[in-house]
Image 1 (cartoon, rainbow, N blue to C red):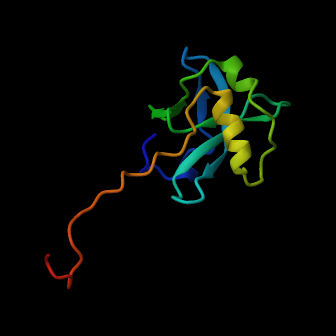
Image 2: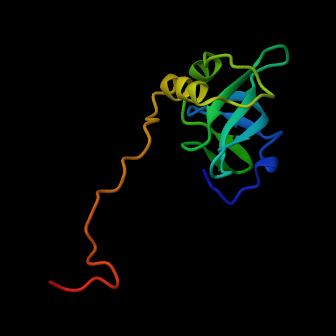
Amino acid sequence: MQTDIDPRSLIGRKAFDRNGVKIGTVDEVYLDDATGVPEWAAIRTGLFSRDAFVPLEPSELVDGVLRVPFDRALVKDAPDLGVGRHLSPEQELQLYHHYGLDAAPPSPAPDRDFGTLAGKDEP
C-alpha cells in the first residue's frame, strides 16, 4: 500500500475484492504500533453486518477505491475481533494466517566483523 496516504483519507472509501465485487466501506484504519504505518482496514461489509479486517500491505488505493487482493467471501469470513480496540499481536497473527500471509518477523542480519575497534593496537 502507498505509505504516503493519510489513513484518515481511507475512511469512507469503498472497498472491492480482486474480482471487482464490492466488499463494503472502510470504517476504520489501524496503524502499526512501531512504525505508525497503516496496517489494517476494518471494512463494514453490510448495513447490519460486522466489520472485517483486511491487511493494507497487499491492497492498493486505485481511482479512489481500496482494491483488496482477496475474494469477498474470504474477507467476510475473517475472524471477528471487534473494532474500536487495539489489535494484539496474537490477533494480528490470526488475521495474517487467515489471509495466508507470512507474518514471520524478518530474520536478523548476520553478525559480521567490520574491523578493529578504534584505539585498539594492531597486532
